Amino acid sequence: MAASGRTTDKATGTRGGAISRVQTYFASGTFEADIARRVAIKTESQNFPASASLAECYRYLETEMKPSFEKLGFECKIYDNPFPGQGPVLLATRMENASLPIVLGYGHGDVVRGMDEQWTRGKGPWETARDGDRLYGRGTADNKGQHTINMAALGAVLAERGGKLGFNAKFMIEMGEEAGSKGLNELVQAHKAEFAADVLIASDGPRVKQDRPTMALGCRGAINFDLVVDLREGGHHSGNWGGLIANPGFILAHALASIVGPAGELLVEDLKAPPMSKAVKEALADVEIDGGDKGPQVDSWWGEPQLTPAERVYAANSFNILTYWCGTPGRPVNAIPPKAIANCQLRFIAGTNVTDVVPALERHLQAKGHHLVKVMPPPAVNDGEFPATRTEPDDPWALFVRDSLRRSSNQKPAIVPSMGGSICNDIFTDDLGMATVWIPHSYASCSQHWPDEHILMGLSKNAIELMAGLYWDIGSGLDVPKMR
Image (cartoon, rainbow, N blue to C red; front, side, top):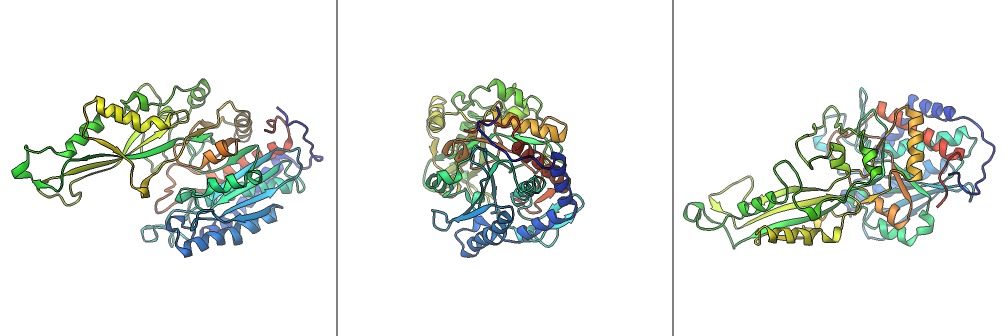
């Protein structure tokens, strides 16, 4: 699988030397200082198009990312978003030899709202605080800490190899992921050659267990919609009209119960996931779900029957109710409500016929006699729709990364075909046509998107060692997959 026609300079340094360099970087406190500096920039993309938030996102790229990449020998370009009021994108590029593979990295420097008044650790979200193994701060886990780890690993390999990586590298930092990556698809489409690469190796999301290296090869998609029962104008006194006029809350509840059974099983055949491939099933055979010390425990009785918990979340489709509204929630009155609404979502894997989701649901409701229930699009503020993607577990790049992580950690990494969270992976798989391998550096109980977000320092140290080993292995040229 060696890359065709590649040439490399005479090797210097060692793999162990690169790992030793990141260990020194970590132990010296520089890692923690780098994150503290980056967390302090208030890059809240969910406040767009507020000018202050947008200015902070530009500041993150111009004063923090651009100088950091330039120190590593990258050329940097900052692109304005084609959508007015949305976050910019930085592309850092370092080309050593046209015969070498191009590895694209990705991170997002924007964060969710700080929720300042709800923090219980340190002085709030914009100042990191250390408590034992935990480092608190908005963006520590999602995603400033994760791309800081990968950037430092690149720097260690460069230093150990005498100023060479042994491969070509590009690194994208976007500033609108938490706002839906608006405009990123259009930007990449307009500059395909500049963003082109052979593989995406990036970091976001949590490991399946905090002490087990994890690879995610894509993500589940989502489509949101409302189920609505709208019977009449206004509510009517429950004493005078109870038993005489239909209650939309019950009608909607019965319809929902026909979609998902009492044990969480999906009852609509046309909404189910396509069968698992042999490679996917084998990859998930030894994956355990662990939410960490403060995370929820898996309800073993809930979900698709005959599937393991890992298969349910990474290789199956699931239907969920996100909100259920009927009457006057929080302040009930003695009246039969006129309307009931459930905001629902289907999380689906690659291969699902997305265009048939709504028609299939409508067919099911009609067949079950729920003719008063309408499938409607959700409000625009909560459309929540994104595609499913997946690189197969037996892809040459997936196998290469797996072997490198195993070499560094002395254990087989968990391989997740489709991570549960949303990410703009379709831009890389569909628009740019490359394999994608995500190596998460966080854990499930990190409180991302919530007050007291944090990373684990022990996990971070392990992660930076893994990434230094991986980048070293790519630059060695041995068994590296062929260029696309």
